[in-house]
View 1 (cartoon, rainbow, N blue to C red):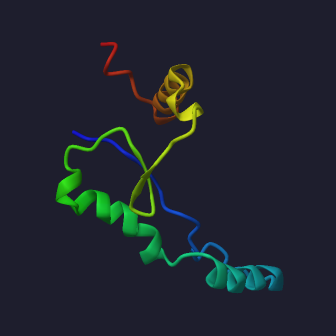
View 2 (spheres, one colour; view 1 turned 90 degrees about the horizontal axis):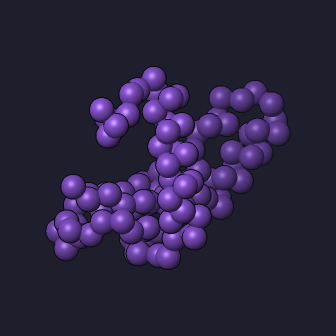
Length: 99
């Protein structure tokens, strides 16, 4: 199994479309101009799932279909363990690695 991180970019979603406040309509219009479409945002995910040359690539950070350096914090084992433990707790799961 391979695991990689993906940054989809800034995507113009429909999160503010159903707002009746004029301010949100203005934000929605601006988002459509400045941000990527949903299809563009999904491109890197689709690329990672379907590109044969990447089937053994793991532990990388991808942005716009390319490997990019990830932050130092993303490699911090203590932070990773806190995230893992918090995720298990929030999901109501026992740690399968400790049983």
